[in-house]
Image 1 (cartoon, rainbow, N blue to C red):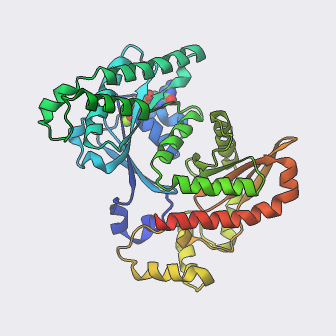
Image 2: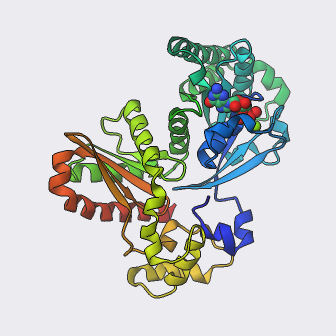
Image 3: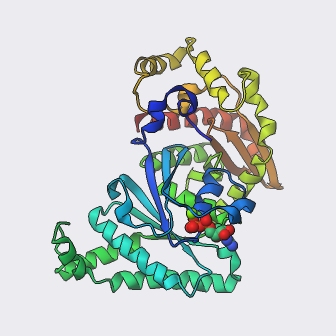
Length: 399
Ligand SMILES: Nc1nc2c(ncn2[C@@H]2O[C@H](COP(=O)(O)OP(=O)(O)O)[C@@H](O)[C@H]2O)c(=O)[nH]1
Ligand SMILES: [Mg+2]
């Protein structure tokens, strides 16, 4: 799956150039579920195939094109940081997967996480850490909550107890921080404890998408700008909440953050995935304009785009000139502004309606609002949507 038509067909050199991708390194014990966490969400592999994944033999890089292009590195068993062929600075986030049902061995896994985290943090303190406390559906609800809290508590304790001074000798002070100084150590401890994020996950429910949503949002530099556009849209449209989704993975990329709760996000994520089960029915909207299918669609669109089409022109021209080694193209390069959007609305309860628009080929906007607002103001809302779309486009084009 791919946002970028150029990845599919036109240029091998672009496909090989990963420098623009935000990189996420996935680590963890063998059989913790690393490959499952990645493939079920970003490669659309059905959950029932999870038990049949082979053991990952070598680092595998999974490219995924969303609001930002990302690359997730899946690692094999017994992976050591020294085996990385790139500096650790290459990564924006480390996701550590821990199998929560293995309560006899998870202390060992936590120790490893803490060790990795501290080593990496001392090289680059802006790298983010996120622990997926995985396979949660296996445990009973009570036991699950207990384990979850226990794992977080142990992680914090192990960070506090870490023998920082041993690293000072090992690295001969090369990290530029004096680890003999307890004040420095306290600062590092506090930063790590407060920055590390935890999510309880399972491939069998929506929690995994939610966890990825936090990871992706954490690595999106433009997130605050997109959020404020969504907030603006929500209030101008008298809606309650707005969510921007990545269609193919079903991951929320941004929300207006108003009165939002995790429960609400989960429900909306569930809604989107059940709705998307019907997505083939909606594809025809696109096909009506460009007669080809699937990825080939983009090729056809590109050919159409070479016709002058008003305001799109300047950007297209620029892109065409540097077609050889230009940066990544955005979704807007292939979109037809006159094309109708896929849209759908559901009355959930007498008073609440959920409306969805396909916002770009890769993004969907889900709006939660009062049914009477929907009935009275649909036109205004769709009018506001045009501006929201334009705003998102502007943000993405400067990144
Ligand atoms: N119960 C349960 N099992 C899972 C889950 N995710 C993965 N598994 C199982 O864990 C095992 C190892 O998964 P895999 O993704 O290959 O782990 P990796 O070695 O860390 O890449 C497989 O047998 C999966 O079926 C989950 O959410 N719940
Ligand atoms: Mg694996």
